[in-house]
Image (cartoon, rainbow, N blue to C red):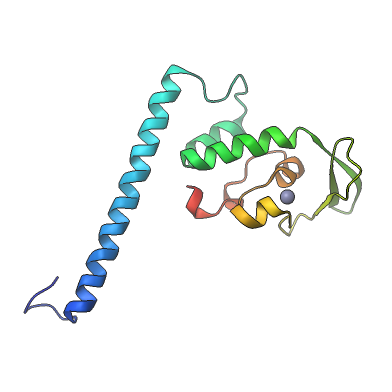
Length: 142
Ligand SMILES: [Zn+2]
């Protein structure tokens, strides 16, 4: 509230008003994105033949951009294999690649570039867990 009955300074009131407005716009844009995606999916299956619970859960929980990242990372995870697994620690390699793989531990996050840049469940973590885990996605992707 701004004006003589306001308990805050006008600058603080305006700042709070702008923050509230930005939050409303963000939520509205998310709703529009979800509505758009729901409309698109009524015409075509978003799962491209794969109706696994992970795809459905990712679709329901992530924003359209997050879901696109999930699909790409999931697709890439099919090209990986693990070697030298012991006591819950896995080294994950791209199939038929000679470069060093990523070390994935059950209690720590992968340190690959994709995971660090986007703060998402990367292809290595998808391969390791074999499912969608919502808590591995930063809230910006919801
Ligand atoms: Zn990774």
